[in-house]
Length: 280
Image (cartoon, rainbow, N blue to C red; front, side, top):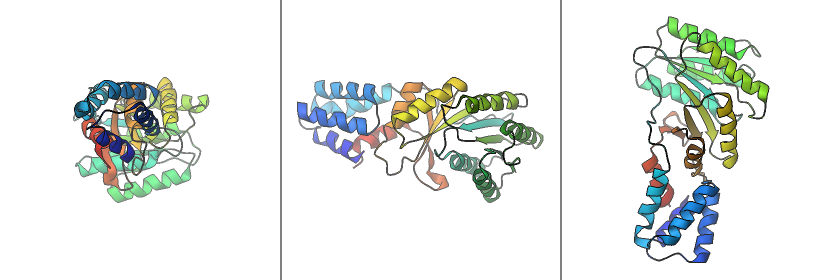
């Protein structure tokens, strides 16, 4: 992103040459904005006067994003249920815990469901976080039915009059149809107890355009309501947050920019685009 910012700073005073445009194209691709975005921005730079370049580019990126609200769902009169999904290794369990801590810090109660029953480390990790933040964690036996754990957690959350339920599911390959069908089962089972308000897809920001293909496959199995982009700290691939929203027409709601709980932040398009174009 620093190289991209350097380019826009350099050509805010002079017109870019054909060679410069080739450089820009490479930078945009490396930043994971994708082919369509790249072609549009290169064309914009070609025909925009230097003194308006930064403003016009930022406006183009901003206008290509969704205008709908980006806040995570909250229902003051009933349980708010959030389902966390994604492939292996995206930071899904960590993100689940960070989101739970945000909710607790805001003064609300939350129940966690450790529905990743195939990975003991994920259950232990969530239990540790639950103890730390004062949130009960519903678990099952290793290898047990994830839908059963999710159902039990939903029942407990309602009985305890909790304000939030967050269900952490197993990471799965988007190419495995049986595992994708399992997500649909969790959705069906939980909605017998309480509506699911959010289905958040956790995308590893370093995976590039492949992450969009993964998210698209998940979207065909369960209706996504939001995207969380993780591992954006120190990455040159910051454009992926914009590209995935444009491709899926699903809002990016949260971004992870570090390891601490406070590094899970609400996605603010204006500030994010400004950083993408100006931060060294």
